[in-house]
Image (cartoon, rainbow, N blue to C red; front, side, top):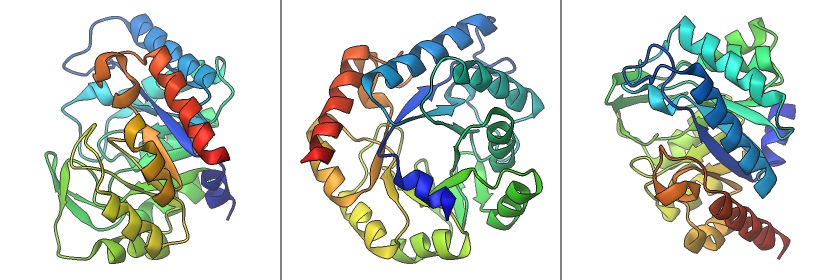
Length: 267
């Protein structure tokens, strides 16, 4: 499928963690500041050599479970539209905590290329309560709004969550891809910035032909081993100033990370 082929074409995704948006408890009262930070981070990632940027409303905690609200969809649509004028590498969308329809709507309106969905298949106990995957609704919604070219990158046993029902990781990966029809999967650690268990990554890769990305905790010192097991990585905290998730992207750290990735993939 074209959606899976797109994910196969990218290896290094950098995070653009948005500052709190209007309506969020921590919003600072300046839309322009939110836009300026997002644009600056995305430009650095592109200039460093990242393959894609994933835009996430990270600053909006505490997150809504499934529906982030019309205001969040509107703000993120405007921000990503602005980013599309500034960068040429592909953009992805994640609307926290698990607003798959919101993400797809934004992506369709802005010509973003992929969405990240934290719980696409199965059920997870999280700090937002029980979140159930709605792959059936998401796939039908993607078709209904003419967003069929947008790839779905789905977490399996997402960070900050615990599976509700006993299962093996291998079965969970297969269900996400074969029954949930995700185009690619993500394996992460227990929380933001926490390293994924590389044995879990190996299990995931052995369980599916879909591309497997590591979604948290990858650092320069673990990059080589990670790329022996996974198709790609999503990087955020490791390339931020002071390795602080909410800080701006560090230009030097992003460049070093991208250069090392390209060197590994050439060898």
